[in-house]
Image (cartoon, rainbow, N blue to C red; front, side):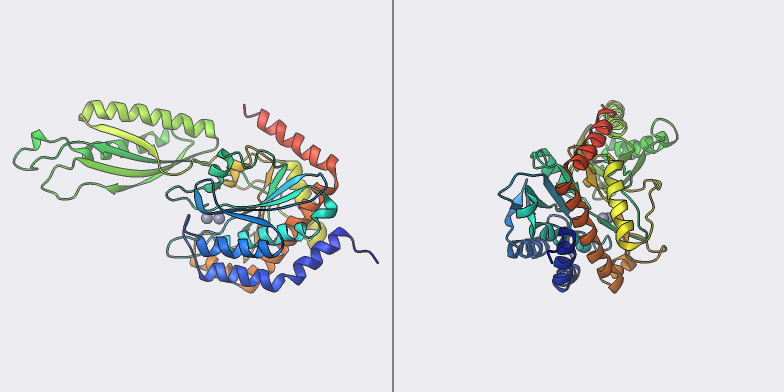
Length: 398
Ligand SMILES: [Zn+2]
Ligand SMILES: [Zn+2]
C-alpha cells in the first residue's frame, strides 16, 4: 500500500527520534551564549547535511548562523523553519532553545524527505542570539539581508508550561546611554569637573518618573554599567544599558525620540555630551496570522486529541521571531514541557528541557510543525488564505 505524505512524515520523525534526542541533549550539555553557538549550529547543520540539505554557515554577520536548503525540481512554495540554539548565562538552556533548534531541524528534514514530490523548497534558518546581547537577535539581521523575501511562511515552536497558539510579544529598543564629562579632583577642584554620573543618574530618574505618565504603556528596565572609577575623581564617563519595551514599534520608537529630547535637556543642564546607541538589533512586535494559527491548532487537536489554548495571554516577553512576522506569516506556538508552575529562564526550566517530557514534546513539535507545513505545500488555496490574512494585518499597521 502506498503511504500518505502524512504517514511518511510521522514515520521519518519516529525513525529519527533517537538522533533528534541526542542532538537536543548535546546542545543542552554544551550551552553556548548568543553568537557563540559554534557547536550547536554545527550539530544542527551536520544533521541537515546528512539529509541532503545544502548548508551554509556564517550568515548575515553572524558566524554561528546558518541556512540549510533542499529544493525540489518542481515548483512550489518556499517554507522555512526557524531554529534557535542559544543559551542563557549561568543557567544554560533555561529557555529550552535546544528543543527549538532540534524540532525545527527535524521538521525540515521530514519535509525534505518528500520535497521532490511536494515541489518547492524547504529552508532552515539557524538564527543565533535570540536572547540578545551584543549583535543579538539575529533574526533581525536575516530579515535586513532580505533572506525571508521569497519565503511564503515560517514556523517554529517554543517550549512552555502550557500549550497555546502564537502570542503577541513586545518590541525591544535595546539602547546604551553614555554621558561624557570631565575629570577633576573631587575635593580639591570639583568645580573644574563635569560629572557624567550625576547626569546619568538624573537621566535614570527622569526616565522612571515618566513611567506613570508619558511612558505609562512602556516597560523600561535598565542597569548602570559604568559609574566612575574612584570616589575622589569626578567621573568623566558613565554608561547605562536599557531595554525599552512597548506593545508596538511605533510606540517604542516614539519613546526613543522622547528619550533623545530628554538627553539634550540633560546635556544643557549638566554641560555633558550624551550618546544613545543600539547595542543589538531592535526587536519588533509580533504580527499574528490567526488563519495560520488555526491551521496549527487543528493539526495539534487532530493529532493529540487534546485542545490547545487559543486566546491571548498578557504579553510579557519579546522575541526576534516577531521581526520575521513583519515580512512573512509566522507561527510561534507554545508546547508544554512541564507542569503549569514551570517558568522560563530558571534552572527548573533548563532541567525540563532535558527531561523525558521535554524530549516527548520535542518529537511532537517536530511532527506538528512538519504536518502544518505539509498542508501549505499541498493546499495552495489555504496558503493563499493565510497570506491574505497576514497581508490584511500588515496593512492595518501602516
Ligand atoms: Zn528566553
Ligand atoms: Zn526562548
